Length: 592
Image (tube, rainbow, N blue to C red; front, top):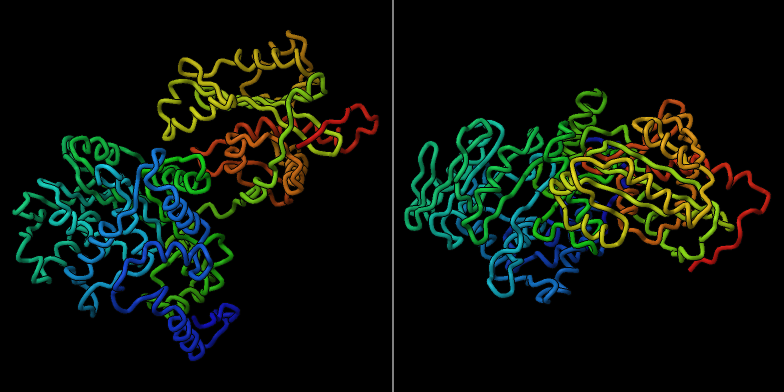
């Protein structure tokens, strides 16, 4: 491989030097990260290996997806993981698309799938059950910047699924918010058939339906405004640009229609958008959760390819644009660069670049609180029996009573560390709606979560927890956010606890939050490797005011931070003890 030229400040180059840079860039990638002719071998595994060893530049989420694939290969075919990677089945749709599908646009005589597409398609079709041979993945999210060939790829896959997946009576759907949008995918699939001598002899194409008579299969476009979508008996569906979706109505209808199929597949393709509380944000959140927490075995039947810049500052280095645009070598990249240099001066146009080309949701004013590496550094454990009789401070966060509720005891230790003892509650009704109920069951099994009957969490559960723990530990006082806490606070005082109100604002929380981060950076926060608290930390985003004061926020409405909020309320008081207590009241606690 030729050495890359990543140190060149590309945006400062004149047009002539920019062309030279671009030719060198493509030459460096040709044959391994970028292809001009079809590969004679399947590249799924090789792509994963080259991403993981840094040969192919990718963002952290794609790297985690590749690590997931390689880890799955090592445990394939076991009783705990009965899936195997079948290269023949992975190769079949790739070979079909490259041999039989002719692009309807551009000066191309055939399609050439790039290494990243080998990874996506190979993963979706290659992972099968060791006994039945049926596909592992029931859903897949392909999340990339615009103009990365999503439409062409999915149109080719639809033609494959309709005629050559071995399914009789297969119903294939292109779905979107509007009928016009769903027709874009449909029209490309139809055009591919019409220009291909092989396909045009086997399919019958119409204005609103493509039929494969030999197996009685069909391809149709459908939109969210279509009525009576029940009973569609789905075999394969492509949801286009789900960043526009505000609800799950169409998605849920299609999911429920898979019941009679042995191996249905739904693929969502999209760039980022501005609908931050819609399905796409949830899907990306779930994908990050699944990929980051591999050992939790979350969502093992959904495939995720989340390509975007790791941070917005990377937009100033075109060498890194490939993170969001894996098809960068097939794009008019010189034109993209010159357009970007001009458009970045206009805030509204720059925002469109960030969202659509670099695939970052529009909440760019928020910063991550801590990264995964920092969280994992805090991996010490402590036997809670050694805390008996110890002084501690409580904190709780009631949040919405019909959602998560959390309580915490924070123990300051002799070496400047803190130990957190936490408990969370979730109502049964909310548990039943959760996208990952198995994970909540694991938290419950570990003793970190309690699923309580009914529609909401009664504050008496929190009261009882503090009362029971007061028999073991010396709870100096309990800090709280007055929001929705009046009844519980009165009951705590009646039970003999001293309470302390923590005002929820930048000024009051900034110092404790900054100190909490410093403790995390030093590896001084001990929570006995609780997966639930680790999840809470992963979900925290940092908000700053104009004076650089801090407040916690969550990534999105589906990513809870209640356990962190409870700990921060307690820490607002503990931080004073860590800094100012010189009386030596706290005895020695051994750490392992």
